Amino acid sequence: MASAAPSSLHRLHLIATGGSIMHNLALTLHRRGAHVTGSDDEIFEPAKGRLAAAGLLPEAEGWFPEKVTADLDAVIVGMHARPDNPELLRAQELGLRVYSFPEFIYEASKDKQRIVIGGSHGKTSITSLILHVLRYHGRKFDYAVGAQLEGFELMVQLTDDAPIIIIEGDEYLASPIDRRPKFHLYQHHIGVISGISWDHINVFPTEEIYREQFRIFAEMTPKAGVLIYDRDDEQTQLVTVPTSPDVKYIGYGPHDNVVRDGQTFLVTKKDEQVPVKIFGEHNLRNISAAKEVCKQLGIKGKEFYEALGSFKGAARRLELVREGAGSVVYKDFAHAPSKLKATATAFKKQFPQRRLVACLELHTFSSLNPDFLPQYAHTFDAPDVAVVYFNPQVLAHKRLPALPTEAVQAAFQRSDLRVFTDSAELADFLHAQDWTNANLLMMSSGTFDGLDLATLAEEVVS
Image 1 (cartoon, one colour):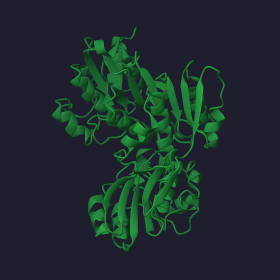
Image 2: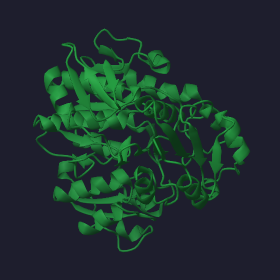
Image 3: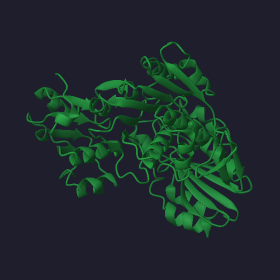
Image 4: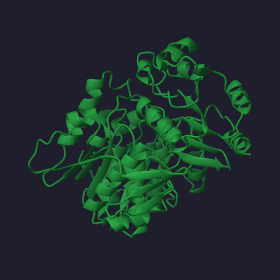
């Protein structure tokens, strides 16, 4: 069935509307004047409250095929849905146009310059940096990003007049019925690969298969297009070998910098020192990537640095929770081995004189998979006290085998690693620590099963 431009789609139904990016899309479309309905079998905060405030919260959780009617212009299906989802089956039966999220974003931005930020790590931070700089200088742009940003109410913006769109290019699958990686569907003009570190073992069973997705992305760069990549990442080097004389290839490394008293300063080509609120080598690389993208969009170096001073980072990406005279508490989205190592190492380097207590929650399919666990060897060596937590019930939900705590300790190859499977016991352990001249770093894509981080953080810094 021929596709139609999203601006001409007035009646839309979203399957799995409670997802972090899907509920933002629902809100954006609603504000554009579309009639939006949706369903999901579980909706949590903040999506629940935000959808309710807009009058878009489904009356009941679950799947209701009767919501999918022949008068709909299109259905958008989120990755959370299964291929046998009753609403999806009904849409297919009626012959309705079914979009995945990335397909829809592409259709909405066909006439725009598309900048897609890909990579196993750093893509949210790079995207966030670019958005911050562009907004600071009053540029018109659309965007789709995976984290909440300060000053941006929604994570998706689609307008008729913005000439460009900045897209965080996830390599995970587009939808339950489209097994292509999301970032293959956006058809970028400017592409970024921030680094490649095997992830999503449930979809890409080998490192080679995973890396191949980035090679395809690199080779999709069109004539007169630009490919920006981390020149020091070995896996990235394998897929970004210049193959087209018509493509501009730009490699980057960490931005020149100095650290004084827990504060990072960027050193510019004019030997000026620019203070920034984010830190760590991985973020210095993210800054370089964002600077190269902004340069392609006409933002000069001086303008970039001017905007950067007020950038506080994306939500849960080395996000400051509380700060005291001799202690700080941060939370971070890190869960993959490369992210864990980069974040923990950066944190220790930033505050070398303070004891670091760091906690990681194993929460994703890959991180809980016994075949993938060895990838964590020596990635958690930087902290003075290293703690790993996982909930055995999550293993059961993901249909993974039981995971002995001894196997976790062996995989990390750290003999003093503490492993907890009960969040109350983890909380007791943390409360019992001596927080004099010590920092706390909590890393997870989950919530440590509801651990009260705000209360704990107050105790740490006091």
